[in-house]
Amino acid sequence: MLKVKIVRLNQKAVLPVYATAHAAGMDLTACLDDPVTIEPFTTELIPTGLSIELPEGYEAQLRPRSGLALRNMISLPNAPATIDADYRGEVKVILVNYGREPFVVRHGERIAQMVVARHEQVELDEVDSLSETRRGSGGFGHTGV
Image (tube, rainbow, N blue to C red; front, side):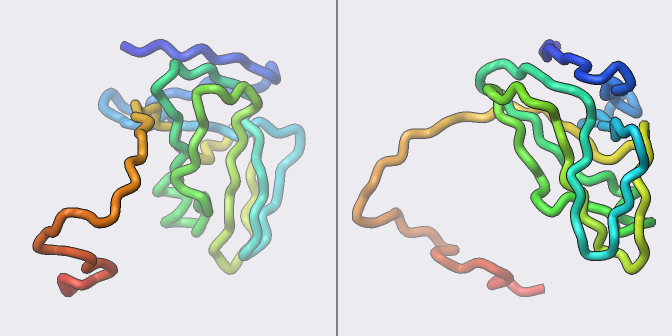
């Protein structure tokens, strides 16, 4: 199992946990002194009170929680957000309220999921043309509904 170093920047911070045995993402929680209200169609940057050290070749992806999206229209506008292996600052989550009512975020509330994933860096090879495929340049719904 991959080990990731984590530091509590605030003693009130809650360490991320997997909610079930086969969950892909760990739940991240808000680390707040006071509740934060997200007005409709606005964003707020919510601290977690945590900093992580990922091994080289890995990233942490921050993703919305489905329950918040379904019940309150709360999401991450940049999902999935990426935390790079060389970032050592506090993990913070940009939350957006797509709903019609203000949403209050309280300390300890689960606000996002964090998935740690392996990635590759590539070397780009500039060429004059690409190989032909059946699909070609078709995209954005070209195969129908």
